[in-house]
Image 1 (tube, helix red, strand yellow):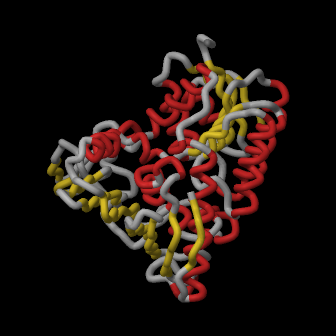
Image 2 (image 1 turned 30 degrees about the vertical axis):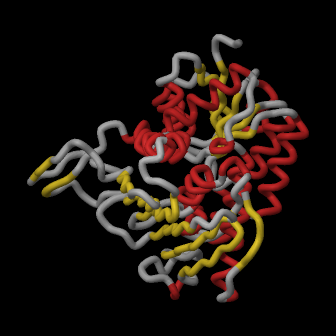
Length: 354
């Protein structure tokens, strides 16, 4: 077992920042290098990263890396993951795995052929509140799970790439609702034994058809309904019309009970402020009046533990669980594509996704 895992980060903005934050909390990780086309030096200085590259291909060729974090815009995930696989590096890819089903399938196949591990960044799987949720379900406290409702919503993305339908792969469905989708597949999929067999989706059409974000090529409101082979139903939502901060919630209804979890507004802190203060939670407009500031946001959202888990898998040379695997990322992209198809046709889409 290696004492230290050498990590390289591709990207230098929001996702790269929480990756660096999470790695710095792990004594078994050395952030050896970073590559990006902008914001590179400020990012490297902030996290004390010794070597930087304007070209990630050069970083992959020159650095003896064990793991590469892919923290670039969605449309670039495919190329960076393939390059990492060719270089023989294990790779951790942020959501969504890709902007198309064909690209996602190629990424999974390429990593498998190269013998490298492909990790998929579904942080909800590692969020402490949702891990505890799973424990309660496994104890039988809710009986048989019948219906799960989950959402990720906020008031809109600041990324120009996320506003571009082609570069994002869509709108809030693939950019936000993919989080509850991935977690529900992890929760109910039973390791592939309980696939999704029917989906139906509705969303705005982008641009002038959007509720609020008329400049976004993709939708600013989306919902999806899933049916699993064993009969459970799930409802997922993602939107850019929710003001007041990022709103991530889960509701689970079982034959013997129900459970509700609040990932983003569940802080133990209550603050009333007239002048406001620096930061409460992601996507809040201000901190005036009553607010509920996050205590350890990246930990509570699962980022710290998911990256620690990936590092442990690399150190111990073991494959990841389904909830952190490229296979989960592929299933999410396939189901999102089916939801978009259902929205376009107005018809239920049947298949077998896991």
